[in-house]
Picture 1 (cartoon, rainbow, N blue to C red):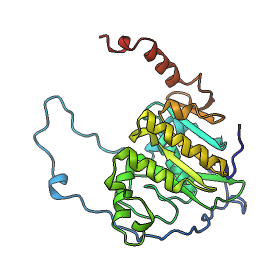
Picture 2: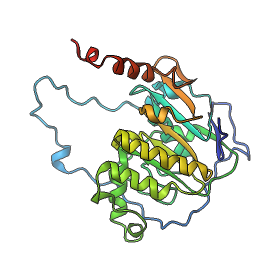
Picture 3: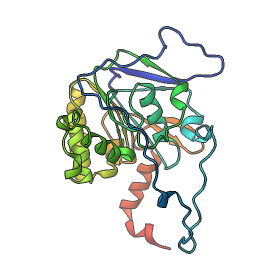
Picture 4: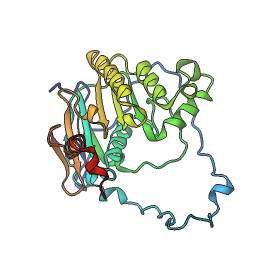
Length: 282
């Protein structure tokens, strides 16, 4: 198991905590990348804001957002005390357990833009991130000279921001002229280079199995140059990454160290491949 070159661990503050000089948050070093200007969130058009009367039969109206503090009910957050990282750390678990919320909060606490990108690529389309980042203490071996937060959910907004910025646009591939999966691979190939700290939130969402293999090859190249990856994923291929630290988020037990063979998703996939037809019997 390879040691973490940059981010060693994270813990959550409690009421008795005070900052020390060692733990006091500080910004990542500036990197040689053009900085885009901040964008105010666009107002939703009236036709979107207005209540839709004609809903399909049997479809319930949207549930209102939970009040402040909803994040504490997530299994990944509820049991967060002290979490150690390796050169590759994979966070796995079912939908709704808080994997993405956890990775998002750690990335923000490390200085990255909540909607993805580097420290210098700052933009906002719709603010949805929790305040969990304010409660986290990160322990560093040393600060990374470069890094990226690849967030599948907000990738389109990030690509649109880059395409509309005259300074940023020449330094990136044209993500809107290729398929969703090709844009993910183009970004990874262009930015996962040298020594860097990379947060990935479900990067497999746009990728075929062949695309995931290419993505893994890019990760391996980057690791050989001294990088570190913290990944939230449902992909068996990423979960099986050699020598990765695997953290499973169980809806009842919360965070726990695991192995690829012990993961609930691994057991489920093996059951599917053993008899695919069994999954479609009513």
